[in-house]
Image (tube, rainbow, N blue to C red):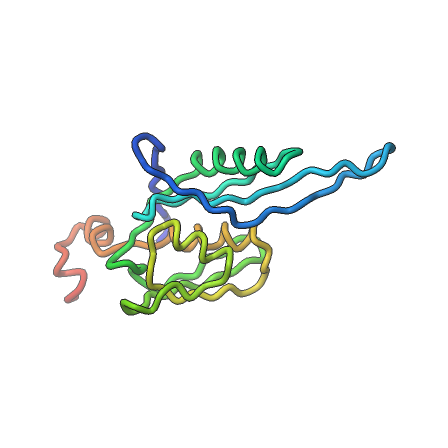
Length: 172
């Protein structure tokens, strides 16, 4: 699997909902004292397979969130969702963050931590088992989760890539 086709999505005529993952107050020490500003990580999605994340920085909290939402809308990707869960097990990595995402039966719910939960629910995944290993930094966890979701392929994509019938994918 040398080439991974990430499906970019345009924001036109898509109803997106945004979720705040993390907000942090950061300080810059200057000659006159500390200058405080805010950094916000935001996830947006249509709860139907489209998800994106963004980072916003500003002097005010509301401005930082607004900038994060704008950045997230520029980084939208389409992920496969089958019957409210993911098609197969997948590992995602970013920097020190590692995530494991597994499909789950109907009624299980989203078994995931805070940053991963926001990404999975924004993508429209309702039943999933997920584990975050390594870094617990929200930046790394969000990016690793999106990495895992973009690596996923549904049966239709596999059939098209291989140039075979859909039944051949399942039955060998």
